[in-house]
Length: 304
Image (tube, rainbow, N blue to C red; front, side):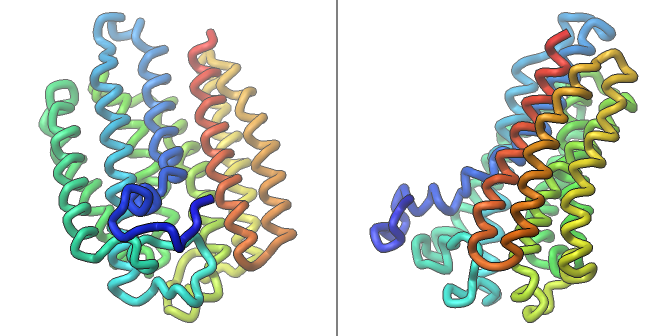
């Protein structure tokens, strides 16, 4: 682990920490599932229709937008005074620690926003002009989430939409200009799985969030309700995965039970720890579980 004292301002290490590479699994998994669904359906639309270039652009766009969201979160949380070095129990943030200067972070936000636009623009060729609207909505979401929506307790709904429904469905849509019920239900399941990451994050921060007036779902329903939600999103994803079985992809239904074992184990771990910095380990465990889910679903779809 990098020692905080050795991190120089605006160094490569500082920017790597600001990008939060561990969060990229949440960006990769929806696209992974969307690509797998599109690939196995290629025969329905003509095998020459599927484009790996479009699939790669979707993945790159998701990665850059995730980094962009992390930069925005880092900048505004520090600028608004909600990132206190003394009281923070979550992972250290670049601006708050002085690893990245605010002016530099502003430029990085502008740069990643422009880069996301450049990556996403060619998708118009495959998905049509509606891709421009989708891209703009994603960019606006990045800003509004940190500045307003997370304080209103809408974070979990937005994760369901922008880390589940939108990326899975759009990744499929750019290939065939349509979305099936299997794809939609798979996207909801994916969003539920990824929401577990936000739930454990807000579970850890519930006391400081309450004091700061940040009415997250965890603050609203309490610790017990939050733990039930954490367990429930994993089980819910498995139940929704029955759509794979019904559509001739039984392995995509059964393999994610491996994920469920890890998910339940992490749930018990969170319940046992309950409070403090030790919950940061559970954050990493949850990110691992999300990746396991994505691999299991994608593999189950492709191994016909």
